[in-house]
Image (cartoon, rainbow, N blue to C red; front, side):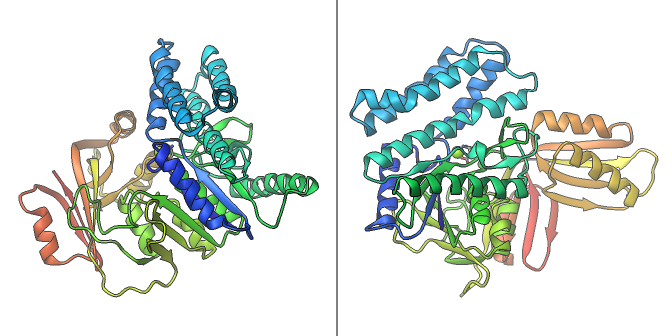
Amino acid sequence: MLVYKFGGGVLNDSNGIEQMAEIVRARVSGRLSQDLFLVVSAFGKMTNAFEELWADWIIGRDFSSSYGRIKAFHMGLAKMLFHDKLQIEEILTPVFDKISILLKGQAPKDRNEAYDLLVCYGEILSSVLVSAYLSQSGLENSWLDAREMICTDSYFRESKVNWLETRTKVNEVVSREKQSLIEKKEYGGGRLWLTQGFIGSDLDGRSTTLGREGSDFSAAVFAYVLNASEVVLWKDVPGVMTGDPVDFPEVRKLDQISYLEAIELSYFGAKILHPNTIKPLQNKNIPLIVRHIYHPDAEGTMVIDNPVITDELPVLIIKPNQVLISIQPRDFSFVMEEVLSEVFTILASYHIRINLLQHGAVSLSFCIDYEEERLNNLVNALITDFKILYNTGLDLLTIRHYSQEVMNKLISGRKIYIQQQSRKTARFVLS
Ligand code: ASP
Ligand code: MG
């Protein structure tokens, strides 16, 4: 079993979808000897478009224009890919009917629950369209609903995967489908499966999502529970680079990196990999390869256990939009275990992740992603016991395998709030 994941960045126009079909065809050419499991996310910026629709829906505002944009985008794409109008109706109308029924009803009181119920349709739409296009191109495939397979808790919008349930359900669904293909004599030792990233459901069957950009993680979850031999993330870049070309012009591709290095990079904010993706693959030693969708034969980047590394290039990562919070106990106590445990309990209860931490005798400073609502909740929870100061609009710069020269170049002229250096990593909170 191989797992291929195609994200919205590459599936953003008809060319991307055609190219996906070419890649699948090249792999399948002749006869498929093993299963190929395809995971897709919503097209282009459609998740953002669904977020706008959701914002209209939950406050009862007129949603004709946000809904219209989503419909027009998918209809337009379908017209480029299918020539038969009736076929387009057949593919898309049932899904848009479901969305319309949902929107006519009352949104769930919990706005995050409403989000997952609605926004998951971005992935449903892209997957039905891609599935039909592959079939039309002679690539017979079975469409599977990830909401019947990925089981999560009910922390909507950032749901955690229930691994045991998920393993059972994925294998149940795949074996059920396989059995029915065998009965129809349509299974020939390998099959194309196609499902959605990012989405799942909780134990009560309510739709959930795994957090923005979560489809890479979904691919890893499927690979883990299906014991895949390899995962390929098809992107619009040649592989994992030594920095984001938008921030740093002179970047190079990393040919091979270890799971551990990949975890470090994604944790520090490298956008190419979702931080949760690597761990499950590492646990089963499943190689992860990042490849360019338009250069499918190029080498890409391999994430494996024992990479061959010729020279350790400095890797530069900027995490923008940070807030640095400094707190001091009001009772003048030292920052000891009890204080740390109180603060961490509060952070965990709001699902806030610390990106950098530093403490002295009487104060504790930490950096988190800026999000207005979460910051307000946090400040309210801390204000009785702590004096609080915070700065917003900061960057967190991480340099893996740093040299003095690279550091000087990147921090010159900037105001440094915190600086931390370990053997391999230098980190700066800067404005
Ligand atoms: N469609 C979702 C998003 O845009 C998930 C993903 O792309 O990975 O966040
Ligand atoms: Mg996306």
